[in-house]
Length: 633
Image 1 (cartoon, helix red, strand yellow):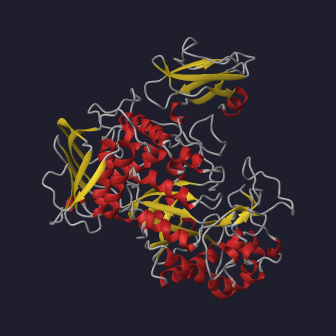
Image 2: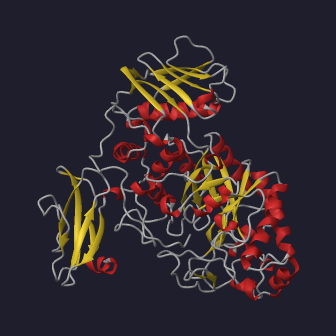
Image 3: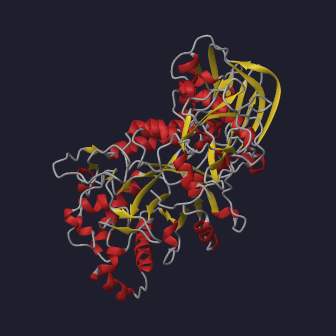
């Protein structure tokens, strides 16, 4: 977990007008480049004739279309190379259409036919995603739905992505998620044209990928003691508690995941986080540590093992690989050899973040290395490590990427930087001519709370409208060096796939729109109107999402008599807030919030609920006044 504490304000992009679906009745996320509505509608026939032309490379798109239409609508799809009477037609352009590129498409829906044209199969796939969003919400059901009029409005759409890198990071190290669950996560990504899944495969709590030449990484490093509660505060496990909680992906699992993703036009970026965050590897192979006694270490189960206070975090146990130990580079060569063979994507992410250096400072081997290599600081020691690792990664035919800490002490010649500590690291790397992916905590951290209450307690908050506000390209850099952006889901507090979905959506929709859609099309009320329509689609799909956008934000100041003056802010447009201080449960017959309110002297809590008209929209929310008093200015 990235331990950067900050104050996240709630700020809107536009006046918070009523959050309605767009006037044209369409609710497409991400917003297309150009949409022209026409008269009429397409009616889905009982049997769809799909004309594909030369079907080379189209098998995944055809299979996806068949599955979606068959499951919910019960529609059979007959595939033909040439079919003059086809109801749906795929066209790979014989002559390249430069504006739409490799992932763009042109979609035409008329009363008689649906035609999707693209330069490549990926464009057809994204055109299918848009077409699915034109159909009724029930298309997202996994079961046949009776009584639905399966129609789509007539429309012409030209669309293509703003960025090539449109990602989500899924931490499968802190808590293990099965292959099927990762596939489920991919299924939701592709609905919003996200094309990069960054898998955080190794950390202090587990090593999740089989390395056949280093079997202890998974026989030992993949398991810890099951704990439930507030991660990071657990009592240390007793010696007799079973270390059976966790798991890993076999190499066959990885091959199947990679193919599953490829069939949906998603690349998988593997991350092996070193030299910090490496406790699971050290437990498996203690000789990789600089510190005597590492053979007594155990894989972390959520008990405290780091001190996050102060400008530089320090380790209670040494969770780092030793840059002065040549066997570490032999180890990493073996790891990178197998990782490179398993993952066809061009990059390997090597972490580099939050590397505690207090044990290095005590190491005679590190001191000797500093003398030998003329290294002045511990940051330069890490830079020495990163540059050697960069050569190993490149020797496997891959590009080297790390978190922005790899800038400290000197950046390797070809390294790409993923900027998480705000945007500063990304700006610095881009000005040096390096490729950058933006994933700043301030906008893109999905493990952060989504509202003030009703959320698992984490050290910061990130609301949907704040995520939507983000602009990935800083004014001061060459836009060509910003490859794109992604949102990161760290899973210390995420124990299962349902909670992973809750934390990802709808903020993942905001990320999807800002990396795909034209910058000038951004509008918070317009976007939120679409989000509400997609909540209905998630209900049909039985996919979990957070309704936190309907929870008001709380802030307070102290009056002269030490009571609180409380301000409530609605993130979702068009909501009314009703409240009580008397411990009862308010409804729309209670006082309506219209201006900052004074808390009664002896009140202990404020309870609120949000309505739209006479309909309950939000969750009943209870805010202890003692908590507000602590935050009051």
